[in-house]
Image (tube, rainbow, N blue to C red):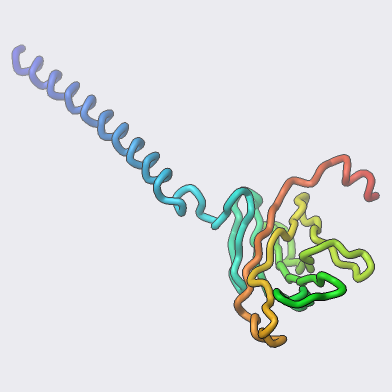
Length: 169
């Protein structure tokens, strides 16, 4: 009888020890997520903006969407240190593909300019994708192709408003 009590007591202590280990692992994971920005932010997002380098591809699980920054086809932004009549625009190609859709290339501009059919936002698969940032900014000494391959963009993705959809029809 005494042996059964000891075995049961050891079993209870073992279970309590397992529970303590689980709590320790959870606390360690939480502190790791606070100190490691990659743990909380696997898609390189800052303040809701997703950043992509030229040629980079990411699968965004929360949107069930694959996003690829193909490149910048036009960058007519006024270089730093130059006085220009027009501020200019950068035009980025962003390829998007849902888990059940074909790939689609969106031409997103750094500014809305209806005269040239430039749009900062485009709708895809129930989401509005908006170009927020294009870097680096051209400098006066940069040639036309000096920035090719060096661009980075910032985009936001938001659920399309249902009332907006009905007004488009």
